[in-house]
Image (cartoon, rainbow, N blue to C red; front, side):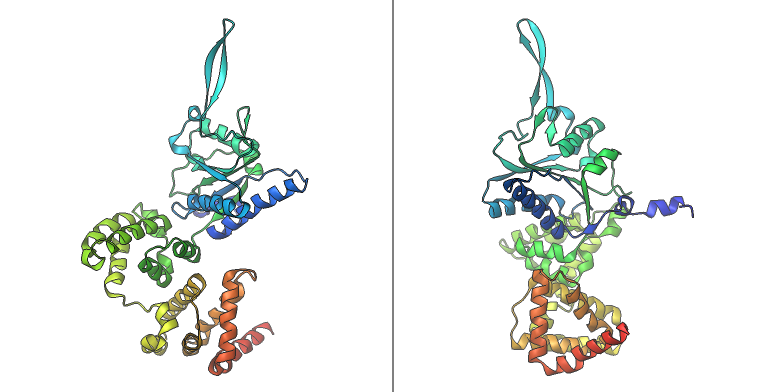
Amino acid sequence: MSTTPAAKSEQKYYEKLNIAVLSIDKIKELVKKNIVNTMVCWEKGKDIEKQTFHIIGPAGVGKTSVCLQIVDELREETKKDWKCVMIKSPVLSRDDLLIPFPVVDNGNTKFKMLYSDFIPSDPESFGVFVIDEFARGDHNLQMLLWQIQNEYKIHLKDLPRGWFVISLDNPDDQEYSMDVLQDAAGLRRTLHIYTDVSAPAFLNYAIAKKFHPSIIDFIQIHNEFVYDFAAQKRGSVYANPASWERVSNILWGYEYNGGILQNIMEIDSLISGLLNTNKTMMFMDYLKERKDISPKDIFNVYEKVRKDIRGYVKESDNAKLGKIMASFITFLITSKPTFGKKEVENVARFLTDLPSDISATFITKIDGYDRKSKEFEYATRLHVALIQQNEEYKDEYYSTMVGIGRKAAQ
């Protein structure tokens, strides 16, 4: 069957490359572990080659930020003074990295290659050399950058052994202006990973970086607003993890100087330039009224929202209930709130109030996490507490889920 032009235009870049799609926090762990593993091999006498990573993902998803996190964590974990050099391809030329300089030697003019001072030279140093927006550099620059990625050298100058290379790109899709250098050798020598938008990954970062709590609460309720792909395709200003971080900074500024609700109109005007007017309107409504059912309320004061939950059940509004369940699970795995008897009872009532097909996602989500992850450990502890402390959960929910699972397996 032939592929039509329309079908080709809809193909995702990661489908074209046929590569894995992972969350940004998973990529961070894999890249960092690979660097550590390489150094351990060297220490054990196994001289393996360094791996260059090419991280591809939508603008604002956190690619540059995660490189800085890798360096910070390597510095902490290895007790070595790791550095980070980050170059931006669109604003550089080949001459910004190296240029031949004429020198006179015994009356003869020769050329000596001068390297930019940001090129690492200390042979005992450690660091990560990040090439941001690789595919937006001009052709001559890209040829030099391929050498950095594939050979860990610039012209005849080797990077210090302790330096690793990561390149970053937006996907070669219609939303981005790209100048992709098609090079089979480059594709072969570089490990390519695609990162997609992940609300839990964003929230983990936001919680760790102490974003304004209203943003954390809002995204825990509305996972779909982390990244506004529709606005991006229209060419509009669009919400993304990077813009939410800037919104957080604006909110903290007003939090400490005059109050948020007291300056709501100014905040509205400012953040519309980061999120667009439509998403800003939704976020402003949340700030002013907070009508949405909060997963925090389900967890801490379920009786406050139980009437509304039961109302959605009575109306068979499974779309709304599914969204509430998704936000509740996201809240649990990102905030990992402390629970006691009261909170366990709240969770049990919430799950037993829901239709079985909606509440079943609680178990399936837990089962989907990596067994060694903090998310799985937390969710399992909560699940065990629910079984041990709440008979209603055990009899009406858990036993039902087990029965459904057994029938599906037959």
